Amino acid sequence: MSAAAARQSQPSPAGLDDAVVAAAEIVAGHDGAAELMVRLRHGNGVLSSVTLDPETGFDLLHAAGAASLGDLVGLAWSPIIKRL
Amino acid sequence: MYDILIKGGTVVDGSGAPGFTGDVAVKDGRIAAVGPAVAGEARQTLDAAGRIVAPGFIDPHTHFDVQLLWDGAAKPALEHGVTCVIPGNCSLSLAPLKIADRKALVGMFQQIEEMPPEAFTEAFDWTWEDFAGYRDAIARNLQLNVAPLVGHSVIRLWVMGADANQRAAKPDEIAGMQELLRQCLEAGAVGLSTSFVDVDEDGRPVPSRFSAFDELDALCAVLGDFGRMLQIVPEFYATDITLARIDQLADLSIRHGIPTTFSPLFDNNGTPDNAPRALARVEEQFARGARVWPQVQTRPIDISFSLLRPSLFLSRLPRWVRIMRLPLAERLAALKNPAIADKMVEDAGPDGGLAIMGELVVRGGDAAPAGYVGRTLADIAAERGEGPARALINLSLENGLDVAFLAAGRGHDATDRIGPMLASPFVHIGASDGGAHLASFATYGDTGYLFSEFVRKSGSLSLEAAVRKITADTAEIWGLKDRGLLQAGKAADIVVFDAAQIGRGEERPEFDMPGDGMRYVRDALGVDAVVVNGEVAWADGRYTEARAGRVCELA
Image (cartoon, rainbow over all chains, first blue to last red):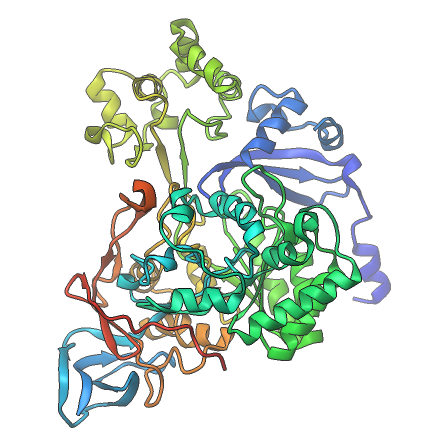
C-alpha cells in the first residue's frame, strides 16, 4: 500500500463530541470493586473504552439521567460528561 | 561439610532448561553444588524425591512496606515459596519521610493497603526518616529477601511539603528530588515507583500525579546513572492512555538506559482488545530497544460488595441503583421499608434474583453468620425459604448491612487468553499486590496458581518456563544480583514443591493484623520447604526461627 493510500484508509479525526455510548458493562476493578466500563463509538466508527470507579460510575448514571446501566446505551457522550 | 543437601529431587534451575534428577548443596548461604549426584556430607539433608527443587520465587509488585516491620516473612508469602519481595510500588514507600509528613503518608497507605491504623501506631517504632534508616529497620528481622522501591510521592512530600499534592515542581525542587533519589539509590533502592492513578484516603490524587513530565524525566536521568527500574501505574482503565504511557516509558527507557515496568495489565471480556493492543505496542517498543515490561497477574479478579457501601454490581436494576446511591441512614431505612424491599425484589426478576444473584457467595471476615460463610446465596435462600434477592436484603439487614458477597472470577479469568499472555517473552509475571487490599481479597498464592492453572490445567507454560518466569527472568529484569538461579555461587534461595499439588488454598479471613485487624489470606498448597540464603525458613507446614533474609544486593 502506498503512503497516500494508507493515509486515505485512515479514519478521519473525530473528537468526543460525536461519541455515543455503544455499551455499558460492569467489570471487575483491580481492588475488587465493581466498576463501570463504558464503550464509546466515535463518529468515524472507532471504538474506545473507559472504565470508571464506583463513585464516578454512580455520578455518571446520575448525570446521564439513567435509571440503570441499560439506559446509557445510545446516549451522546459529550453532554453526559459536561454534566459530571 | 555442606550446611544443607537437598537430595534426589527434580532440579528445575530457573534457566528454563529441562529439569533433571539431582542434588543441590548449600554452604554459607550460597549454592555450593548442583548436579546429578553431589557427593559429601551435610549438617541437614532434605529428601526431595518426587519433588521439584527450584529457585525461590520473586514477587515484583508488593506493598509489604509496613508489614515487614513486624513480620519479616511477609506471611503468608514465604510459605508460598516466595523468597524475595519488592515493596514500595505505586509511588508509595515508607521512606524517605519526615516526621511531619507521617500522617499524610499513613492516609495513603490506609487507602491502598487497607491497613488498620494500629499498624502505624502500635506495631513498630518509627525510627527513621531517610531511606537507609528504613532499610536498616526492616533488615533486623527479615526471613525473606527484600528489594525495596522508593516512592515518587514520598520524594515529592519530602521536597515540596504540603505543595506536593497541589502543583508541578519548580526547577530547584526537581533538583532537590534528584538528589534525594540519588541518596535512596545509594542506600539500596531497586528503583523508583510512580502512579498516575492512585488516590489518598480523601480521594485526592497522590503527590506523584501532580508531576509534570520534566520532573519524571529528570528523576529517570538519576535512575539512569544507576541503571535502576522505573515502575508506574498507568491509567489502566483506558486502553488508549495506557498505550501512550507505554510510548512514554519506552522513550524514558531508551533515553536514560533504564528498565521500566507498568502494572497492572488486565484482560476482561468487556474490553477484549485491551491487553492485546498493549502487548502489541510493548513488542514494538522492545524492537526499538526499549525495555517496557508489562506486569500481568495470574489470578482472576473477583468482585466483592456489601450494601454498606455503594456498589455498581447491581446497577442493571433501577431500584437497586436508586437505593445504593442513598446516604447510609436513608439506605438502611429504605431497605427496612417492606414496600420498597418488595419492589427491589421484583426488580431482580421473576426468578427472585436467582440468575443474577444466586451464585454470589457469602464471605467471612465481617458480620456474616459463620453458618452462611462460603455458601452461595441460592443455597442460603433456599434454606431460608426466600428468593436470593430477598435473602440478600434480609441477611444484610440482620447484620447491620456488614455482610460481603463475592462474585468470583469476574475479570482476568479467561485461562485460554491469559495463559499465552503469561508465556509471552514480553510479559513479566507480577502485579500480585501482596500486602495490599487486605480487607478486600487475598493477594497471596499467585505463584501457586500459576502452576495449578497454567502449567497443570491448561499447559500454557511448561514447568520449567513457569519457574523461569518468576525466578531468573524476574531477577534479570530487576537487576537482583545472584538471585533466581540454582547455580554454584548464587544465593541459596530454594523452594521444594510437589508439581502435582502446588497451588493456593481457599480464601479465608485471618485476624492477625495489628489491632486485631482482619485480612484475607490463602494458604500454600504443595510447598514442602523454603530456604532463604541457605537457611530453612519454612518446612513441614511451619515457620522456623531462621532470620536469614536480607535487603538484596543489586547487579
